Image (cartoon, rainbow, N blue to C red; front, side, top):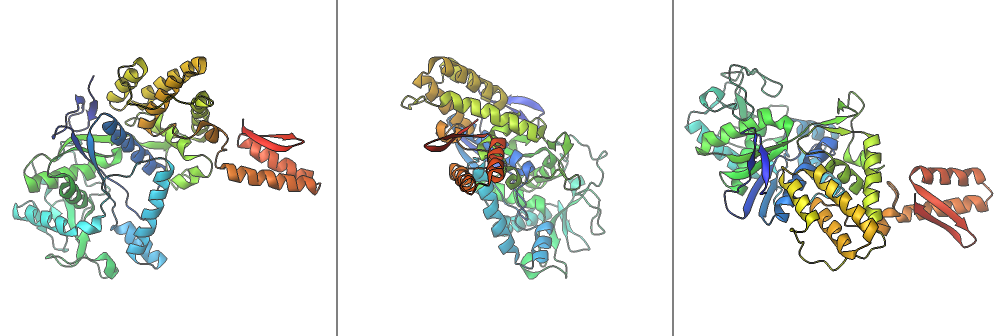
Length: 458
């Protein structure tokens, strides 16, 4: 079976066939970079990291673009609150984002464009739209897209113009001819800092959010490309608006396949600061290692709702340890090209070719682990690691992974053991017992002997 993917545009599973044979061009909407990445970002980044990896494993050359929105109302507000330049804020947050994504094993994209570097391309597209009668400058100074003049508006979301109302991001403005029209260029406000303003024929201002992705994707991938991805929440209005302005300006299909990952919930409720269930990636990494977090997300199909909870994370950690335990003590056979005709690899490929079905692919890994537990065959170990690599897991040395506690590396564990030894020497047995209990809670079992204290992951 060849790769089949669910296309949000056609609402069906379709055989995947890139426009250019052997080369896939993919764009994914990245972060608006005013704060640390949260678990919703992790969910989206992971979903398309899996797509990226599997396309490469399938023999495609992939040009993967994931943008950075580095100019937007929330960014301006946060920079003003902190009393720093916008660029200083976005540079700081981009650095933090890259650290967090590296910790959960996401591969860097081919290109990671910043919106502020593509303002000329955005303005050129806006001028083209205005020349075709699809855009106009309103009394407020903003330049807007005339939604009702684009006949295919709503084809991605399935919404008709009669059904549509001014939504949360489609705000009614006195400068609009129609409440459904959306902003392409936002005129500068007197209260905004100078570094939030760009010069244009329309006066000082900044691009609207939607035009940023159209301009960057077309500049880096061409006027029509293969895959556009993002969270389900972006399907309308953001992706719908991208289609309208791109196809309106260029007169040709924008994207062949649209992919959207499912929503993230926390204990079956939407993640929200007001509900007190909001978690950044860094919050989670204080208690769980990055590979556990990655494995946890792989256990849910990318299009399905994703439920985040400590109980599910604990279960994922236990399951991942089972895989590493099966590899422990077996030196994998020398790695050559993976034999995709072998039964396990063939079943794994069938799962991943079925719209990137990672839960079914993980089931194949557990079958291999069971076989490895019985046979201790180096060839089986090699296959398990090679298939794991296509998902970004099982690449650590098993013994090193198994001896590492949640949130504690080996050096940190040894530091705790030394502190316990000092407490015992000082006859502070209460403190020594406290340290043992804390390590035990993290799955670290201490073994005392006349030669000293050793530890294992329980």
